[in-house]
Length: 264
Image (tube, rainbow, N blue to C red; front, side, top):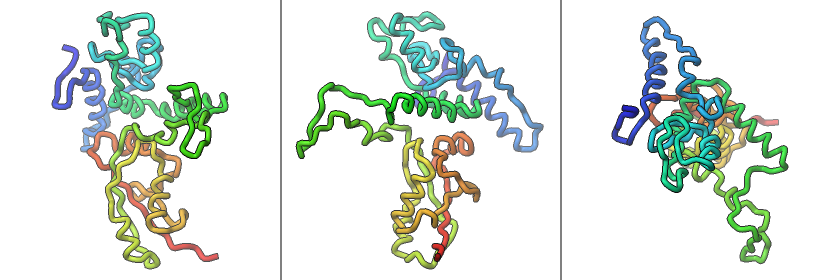
């Protein structure tokens, strides 16, 4: 058998294998001798068969559970209806219907390969900058649209207003680590909603802005922490999750400190 069934669905055996190897690191923390796993031993599970590179936007064929890069398998299926690894027919007429993004696998790859996610983000950013674009604009109509005020919206990217809408969500718990006399109790109550749900691409600086607005404070007065260590503004929740919270249950616990405003 190639897969095991659980409550939430079917999970490929190679994912179980990788999770098992990752769990060895946790076991080693109990006092056992540290177990080191070479990444070359895992390459067969996290390398795309079509491009020989690590998975980017890992996508799995639901019929046989083989995984590839999204761009690789989509391009391949333009001229074929069969899996490139096992040659099973994916779909009679529309093979793309039986493809599914594999977020678990992609998270594992980003966890195992240092710097892969950062380099991919930079590559995408460079791609759009070289073409003078902020991001790719999905347009279903070639003609411009007009709003209620008669303004032409021909070049407006409608999807940009919901750029994070369909992202993977992360649950956070924000805990305050200090008290500040200059902040009134009423304002503090506004921040008592500790549990926050946000897109995985949310950056630390975005959380700071939310707290500052709710407490009516300057940005410099709020500092975000994880395990009492300061977090850089540019770090995303996905990066933080993969590097410090992978395998743990939600929510991801963060702390924030409110500093007194400096008087010039």
